[in-house]
Image 1 (spheres, rainbow, N blue to C red):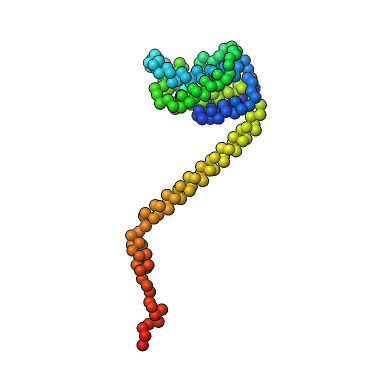
Image 2: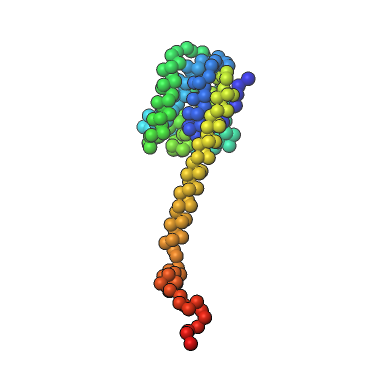
Length: 215
């Protein structure tokens, strides 16, 4: 049975890819792991390399594209392969290691790319945030075709490490916040209070201990 995965951003995709590469893996259906990585790479590369094709759709086509994209975002996932433009129709083999490297390179290139962005054949013009969401949804669908062995243990340790890093980061932020608040408290001390403190420090007190002068 195909696994339903949902990713919010490419960082989540990278994390899942790391788990996939650390496990024994095999495809669940008539696709190879090579095809999954290769197709995903091609989609990401297309989003940053085909910006010159953005004016080939009419107004109505653009409107329909926006409507379909909004529906996809509402559902949060693809449910069928035929919903994906250009989805592989037959099983093909290839160098999985090269496809892996290509996918990692494509993700990094996308994250560094600031624009312009390409035209999607179905959804039309998309900005970087929209493309990243689309890539994340596509990766969730494609990675669900891969069966993993031993991923539970890896996920456990990764989750534990993430919690430890989060705790350490929160501790550092808390210390910085206390330091800033301490400085702000010193800078905003009332001038009258400062004057009173100086006066109190300079006052030597009654030498007779409050018992009056000598008779």
